[in-house]
Image 1 (tube, one colour):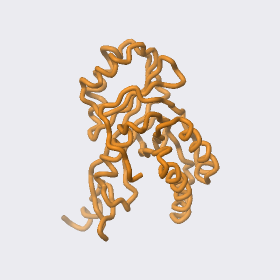
Image 2 (cartoon, one colour):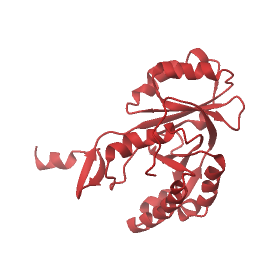
Image 3 (cartoon, rainbow, N blue to C red):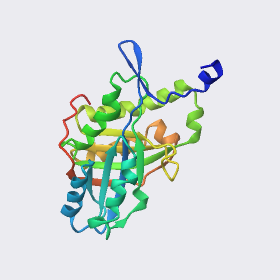
Image 4 (cartoon, rainbow, N blue to C red):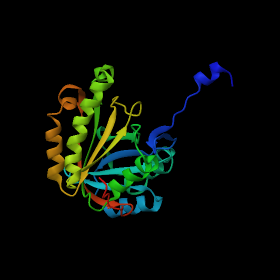
Length: 246
């Protein structure tokens, strides 16, 4: 391969850092969130999803007595336009009213310092959503102010560190944990990230959103947040292992 061809070659692997050396993994998990109204037979819906063998969760929409939210995870996004698409067109899903304002699709990603990329990208997000401890969830998209990307790297790290410190305080006592998914180019509203806040009770999830309002990122560098889907678990595809290392 000549020098010009080498310069043009792309490596799309996620990057980590372990034992003093950079690590690479070209795998990631996609998560799709869909919401419906008019659901009067939860058992029929969950049985249909069980039959598909999907990995995911069904939530009751706290703001809609007939509403549900469905989160499905897969390494292969073809699932969403193949088996899952067919399922959503038939059986117990056919009479439901889709709520497109809650459509979300994102992918796991690495920052560059993770010691275990497979756990970060594939295992930990599933442990969180499938953990029996996490009965409540708030899912929402966010769009950063485009000027954020033009800030010096040192300023970006400082702003994000403030946000991260807040999240760690809540996770330390297991009040809340979070899932962050990138959705660049995957979101019809040009959102940058999909966020899931998960925990055993609803109030701490609301409290963390309230406290985030005061951070520099939220107050000065966000274009939009939401809409917010607030739900309680009705069904999960498997019982996850508790994340004691949060």
